[in-house]
Length: 307
Image (cartoon, rainbow, N blue to C red; front, side):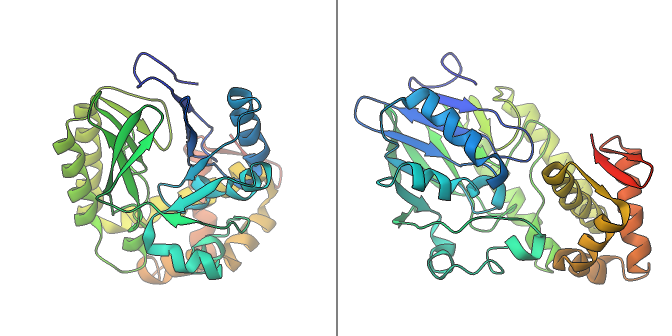
């Protein structure tokens, strides 16, 4: 847990493993709030982390930077534990959440899970919101997700960057996989972050960091590589989805893992758009082998195990 020193008073960061996004907890005498709730298989741990700080206090506000399953998969259990909590999300998918469409929300196409949750309102770009003892600016940050937000506190220069900027890159650009040009949106979001002159970044994944200039440089180099070779980005994205599944289940028989990729729509989409020159089964098997070559997985007889 990252606390005081780098961060404003009353702000605590629970750095999670890669299956779950980091959680940011705000505590002041007046109210409490949490940004992002992790993946559903870690949901009970999320509740325990929050309760460990709040004790008997309620959680008043639950916010999501965007609606990928690793950022909002704990919403439902937090709403069960704290029935009066007010939940707000970026406005772009509010209607989809209210009618609950797991296809439009990307959960079924990516083969991921997210229990249904309710919302009471939206977190609008261009607005300000009081969290903890500070007022935070809400900024649109499209690219990784077209509806994603970042939050900035100008007093101390703290930025909640979600998956728009990590210390060593940024999240998969899903619109590019679907045939829409979005690398320019990633570049514009990186420019926005630079213009804010943040001093401390709380990323969606990984530790809190302060060398923002180096992180932006690394992100721009990565973006340039993907822009020059979109197939490289598409292959990276497919491996990320496969690794995410291994993180969730920890191990699977090779045949079961390939059966999962075969029935998961995003693999069909990526293969058809970017790798149709290779038979799909052969391409998916090579993705598994690539994870093993990189040290992200290991083979034990016919089992593929997460590392």
